Structures are given as C-alpha cells and as structure tokens.
Amino acid sequence: MNEESRTKRREPVVNRLFAAIVAAYLLLYGILLILDYLHISVKMPLVLGLTAGELTLLVPTVMYLFFTRTKPKNASERWRLPLGAVPLLILLAYCILPLISLVNLVSMLIGRENAAASLLVPMKQLPLWLSLLCVSVLPGVLEEFIFRGLIYGSYRRRRVWGAIFVSALLFGLMHMNLNQFCYAFVMGVMFCLLYEGTGSLLASMLVHAVYNGNSVILMYWMDTSELMEAVGGASAEGMQQMAAGGVSMLMTVLMLSVLALLGLAAAGGLYVAIVAVCHRKEQVKLLFCRNAIEKRAALERGEQSEEMSGYEPSGRLWGPFLWSAVIVAVGEILRGVLTL
Image (cartoon, rainbow, N blue to C red; front, side, top):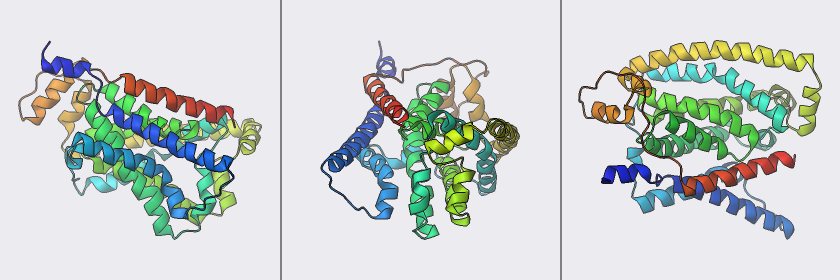
C-alpha cells in the first residue's frame, strides 16, 4: 500500500478540530453549571455574552492552526471575488431566506424552541454597528473559515458530496440545539456549493453575514413583541399556541413553502450567473464527475480534464475523533429537546 492510499484510509486531522470545539463547548457549559450550583453569579459584559459561542470556536481553531502549522491563507483557493459577484451574492442571500424561515418554523414546531430568541432583548442595548459586528460579521467570518475553509477544504480532497454533507452536518451540530441544527445544516450545504461556485470563502462569508445581519436589522426596526411574532414565538408555550392554530399554522407553512420554492428557483438562476462571473463552470461540473478528486487536481494544475460523467468516491472522512464528537453533540441536542 503506497503513502497516498494510507493517507486516504486515515481519519482527516481536521476532525480533531471539531472534537476540540465540542470539548470547548462542554468545558464552558460545565463551568457555568458549577457556578450555578455554587450560586455564584458572574455578570459578563453584553458583548462577551454575545460572542462567547464564537470564543469556543476561536480558541480550538487557533490551537489547531498552531499545532498543525496550517496557514490561514491556504483555507481558500483564492481570497478575492469579482466585483460583479457581490450584488448577486447579496440577492441570493435574500432568495434563500424563505427556505431557511420554513426550516426554522418546522424545527420550532418539533423542538418547541427558538434558540436565537434569547438574544433579541439584550442585543437592543447595544448600538446597531456593534450588534452587527458581534452577531453578523464575526460569526460569518469565523464560522465560514472553520467549516468551509478548514473542514470542508480538507474533506473535499477525499470526497465530493460526502464532504459537502458531512461538513454541513458538523456545522449544524456545532450549534448544539435542534432549532439551529436544522437550518444550519441546510445553509451549510448551500455555502459549500457557493464555495465551489466561486472558489472563495469570501462568498459564503458574505452570504452568512447578510443572513445574520438581516435578523439584527429587523430586530432594531421592529418592537420586540412584533419580532417574536415574526419569528414564530420564542417559547415552548408560544409554539404550542401556534401548533394549536391548526388551519392558520398550515396556511403559514404552505405560504412559506411556495415562497421557498420561488426563492430557490431565483437562487438557482443567480448561482448560475455567479458561477459564470467567477469563471468556475468547469469546477462546478466536477461535482458530478467520476474521479472528481483527481480531475480537480489536474484542473488546478492547468491540465486538460477527461470526459466528465458519473462520480467515484475516494478516501474516508469518519474516524474515532469524529464519531466521538458527533455522538456527544447529538446527545447534547437530545438533552436540550427532552428538557424543554
């Protein structure tokens, strides 16, 4: 067995990063439980409270980059976007909003939770620019760097669609609650496709930031009570009342479903335009090709690729580190659902 074959059979090193992120979350959660048990009240600055989740991502990521000697600039094929792609990406972000809202609503009906609602009231105590920085820009940049840059970037050297779905799964699990897991998984798949269509993490960072920023801006424009109603209620009791609405609830779901389909159709057209502007048609074709990994490498070297048809996977993504972290994350999500 040659060195390349042995490498493909080994678990990707980046799986340790996700395991470290889960461990950091559990450590923070454990500390908070101990403080609560000891009746010790810790008053954190609001900004720190809003960014605490990102810190559980940042610390393990910095350690991973240090110990693996990974250069951040290598997380993306390129760190630029054609200027013409920017407005198309912003429009695409708004086109996928109905789909994300639909998934969000259905997940709230199942899990009886709205994980983002707890941020609504305290966030309004901050200036708009600071809320956008904490909730839109920082997560958009950091989460995309980790999950599309480091994790998906590593996986896509081994598999194509497996890399897309597993990295999206980890992106969803990272949120540690059912509500955010559902729509984060859908967004994770879309962000991977955006990366393939542009070759730049800046694309998914921009769309991610626009999506989060839209929620922040809505919060500042609307009264808190109105926003709670707009997002479908913020508590288990509110969700039970919505579910009891029967016909009105069904009409809301049907309306969102129609809007989601229309939005997806528009997003598809915008995606084709973005791919054309970024000159990534050949790279996107590789998503549906046999021996896609090898052909992508040849394309990057400037070699002529062969006839493109089918798809053949190569290399493993799962291993002990990933299995352990996923089981723990799923257990935490189930615990949250059962204790609502």
